[in-house]
Image 1 (cartoon, rainbow, N blue to C red):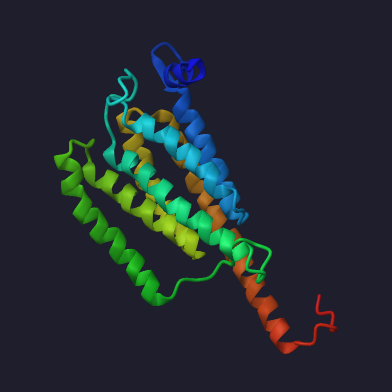
Image 2: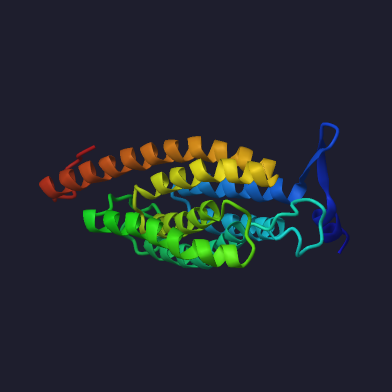
Length: 235
């Protein structure tokens, strides 16, 4: 109990009148570790991410938890943590099944989404933002509410795309980060805003890493198709 009380109250003082919640910092660190694991296609990325989601959920519902820090509730940010947990459980299960299927040593093989799937992603972002904006506004979310809705819809789509193994999911994260930085900064969540800047750079790197991995896997399949004899060394 003492540890939980410390975790909920602990703050890092910056300057004369600025402070960061330890929970916010730790939640973003776990999120970064999860992204790193995802880039390396490691199954542990999912449970690590869930821990970060639980921490950030308490941060973005600041008034609910009675803290003087973060007095603006970001319902989209809070809601996406719950969504992350649900989708992460599914992604964790899916990557575990793929890893143990015997078809590959990695948890997932990156692949390009089809044009139909890409159109679905664009439509999902636009329609999801349009539908969620009035809902979040009615619930009292922080303005501009469309930004919060955009982040929620994009986060859901990116997490789903990661579980499916789409290379494009990294670009969805970039779109989320671009909108998230000014929103979080204006709402006073400075640690998360700073981490979004870092995430933006990191997700671009992840996109090119998965792109390269996808090309390597495609080349390997072509070679194995051309030389099906297991006694032939094609390395």
